[in-house]
Length: 288
Image 1: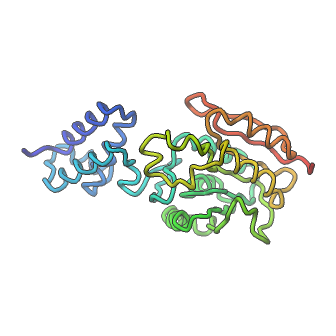
Image 2: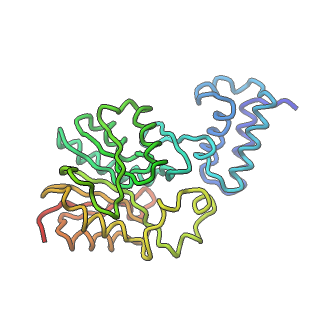
Image 3: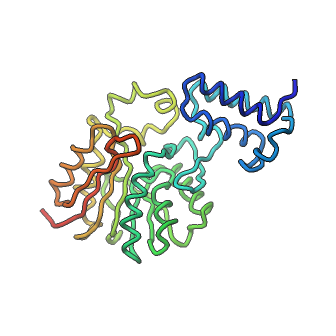
């Protein structure tokens, strides 16, 4: 029986809601748009038109995969972050709205600097560094990432958002310390792996079975990357460098203490929209 685009979208949204998916409205729309090859505006325009059977079948198949745990961003190969369209693959974490708090706070600082250098460590898709570059045109941004698959996504996203003259991706192993001849940065941002290793098995299927393990595993207590960045990346900072971290639930105080112990001052904690401490940042004051 033929069905209109609007009714297909409504049916799918209801199915996702019944499965307990909070973002059912967004995800239903994205799946229908992807399967039909339509933009959001075109989907609205064509809402009363009938859906070709092949498109309906593809939507239903994608919905089944999503209900089994596969994230929509991996199904459609893209997602939006801070207003930027981004390519996404299984090599990178899916950008989340919580992380926009990290980008927003860094943008507030970088926008006061004029010409400056910014380093996004553990860049993944490049979402944070690209958001900063898009809002601070005088900033020069380096995306540091170990995974070659993630670096490939970074390069795609730089081109997709027209930021090739402002942003460069470079291979970096955070745990090995900074490469030689990096120079100093005025701002460093990082959303590092922070899940305690023993907690990974208990994560939701959509995370533990699909998102890259190397982007999740923060060591035994989840704090390995925070310690290493604060301790071993001092050579690419100067007094006045601002360091911004995203942190997991319950980690803000630990990260604050780590930063304070190596000479960061004016340390602040910022909540995400759910009221969870999500960002910790401070300014490098002196050597200790």
